Image (cartoon, rainbow, N blue to C red; front, side, top):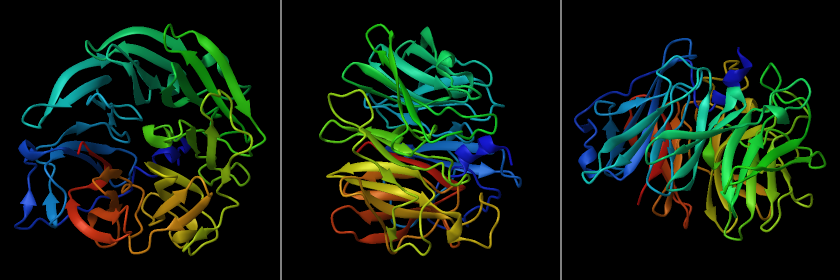
Length: 406
């Protein structure tokens, strides 16, 4: 297996089983919609296929959503939705589709409306957009060690930031997720080798002034025993809590190389270096309710406040007889308390394969996409009461992304 595909283990699967269509099939009446979700359809080998993005009105009632009115989405990529309401759609993460970054909005009829597009370089693996202002945004071209600065209004390139000089020996800098705080652009540096794996337990980020994109410094930490800062295709793998502290979901070696660890790191408010007094190491953190000893990695996370982060934890030991990690049911919904450094399984929600990793907040509920043994669709957990509901809606394909504007 191409190691680069490890980034997509939580977004890709080997086979596709369409949901049975019935009388309550919904063909995407987006005139109602304030909800976005995407699905993924794969070929038998699982290394290519199609993605679909659509807007719908509500979630629930056991509705079956087809891809009838969906727009194309790059395979292996997730949309980025910014606070401005801009929705960015990427080409295939592994290449092979028209190389453009597209910007959509929900129009007055709550339908996805294309507002512009911008060419991207070949083999760029573009995956993350962060907006610094109405006139300035950044898109990460990971495979090229490149960040493109562009104008979201006009979808035109302004300049480029080359991070290749920040490579360590024998690796590529490989910029991951981006974040802007206090006028500084934080760029996660994965530092991956030719097998798309880290060589050491180190966390590195590059910092730039948003005002003029000038380089500030590269920060590095080896004392926390973690590596792989951010999941490169999940823009929520770096986030800010209500105290203004930045937290980074570190993917380590995705559990493939013992000793190269995943976990959580922090950069405190008012500081620009990793907090050496704080970390969660998932190779050492027992998970309440987990049938195996440890999780290997968090492949999706959504912070909701008060230290509570909902996540999809993955561990091959959850399905030890299935050697195909693309289809094995090795994903489990969990809650991480980033303040108390605890992890707990959400009882009653099903395990999922690598495609069913959609996550997002919907009112007082956290929505989980799931590709389990019974259905492909969505389930929920109430953030306040902990009440769970399964099979609230089913979809055509595997549910890979969810976002609610409400």
